[in-house]
Length: 356
Image (cartoon, rainbow, N blue to C red):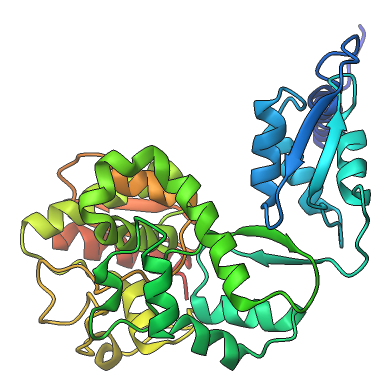
């Protein structure tokens, strides 16, 4: 009788993991390979000053020079201190993605003083001011003063269709909150003006909003505010669309949105610890937990949202749900009644999965 040994779990795991990594590497190599190794024709490509990494990726994909915008962006952002130079290039479809990136880094006239600024999705203007101050010759205070300068803001309003009078409502902390497109941008040097940085980000936002213009133009501030809440409440496009539908249900029922993230913004607190019941009850036009906010949106955006959240604000998923709660693992649970919601919260706490 032959006794066969069962494979050990660790061995099985290593085999599966190894196979997955090999598959992943193969997929990457394919997506990074030349689009057409036999096509040597030169294509003129212009990368304007201030173009974001996603903007460069879009230009290259439109000209069929790379296979995947996402893989291009991930590759660029994974390389530390890598700056893409604004210039005019000649690329061909027989070039690999790495060869194209190498050319973009060297540029036609390499600028060793070039700087890169990464603005992250879901962060506030105060965070962005700090980001700018960390790599330019401007202080955080100078950045915030510029962003609150009425004359500068009115000049911008005349250029961008999505900057409406709503940004000037009394009680708004920062008029451009929510309107600056998160991305990684390159500039010539540390002396870049604050106004140039802001306009480059607004140019990118205009590109991101254009597909939704016909829907949002009549009430753009609502959609930008909704997107900013969805950015912090959800984790992906699908659950953000679900939450958007729930918020709409609550507004229709004249209920408070009850969004904790709006309280943190109202108080200008970081979301690093729980708040007290008194803090959640603070009367503030941003705080949707306040008793006077039934059926009301916050006065304006509470962060700068991603394209995912912009899409979700325009395309909410209809449901009967009125409540949702997330655990510390990012799982989101939806319920119809307050009793069900409170039971789910307690269940999450009992499991030790409460966010705090």
